[in-house]
Structures are given as structure tokens and as C-alpha cells.
Image 1: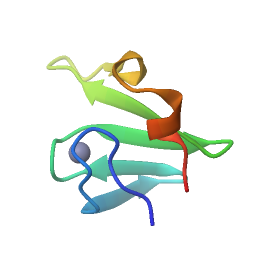
Image 2 (image 1 turned 90 degrees about the vertical axis):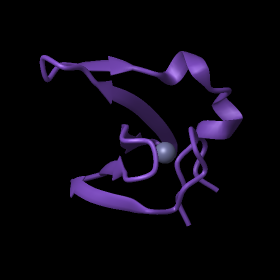
Image 3 (image 1 turned 180 degrees about the vertical axis):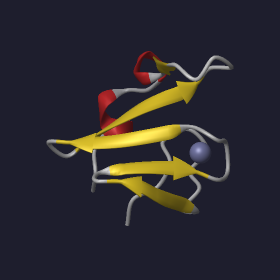
Length: 62
Ligand SMILES: [Zn+2]
């Protein structure tokens, strides 16, 4: 079961192929090669990566 690496919530909405939205902390996630990539949506609609905030172990799909 996938969970948000930021807030550990499992309340994730699917927004596209391998793309998810966390209802707990309002970040977007995309999954590639078993790794969760995290993004924050900025006010202008652009995405900025949050991956630096997490260890790779935290971003692996178990
Ligand atoms: Zn979250």
C-alpha cells in the first residue's frame, strides 16, 4: 500500500497514470521505477520537487 512520504497518509487520490495527490498534506506524487517523486504545487501552478526532503528509503514503494 502506497503512502505519502511526507505525512504518512494513505488518503491518496489518483490524478493520472502513476500520479497521485495527497489529501493529507496537498502534495503531488508520481511513481517511476518503484520510487515516489514528490512535488509541491506552487501558487502559479508550477511544480517544485520536494525530493530533497526525503531519504530514498522513504520514497521507495514497499
Ligand atoms: Zn501527505
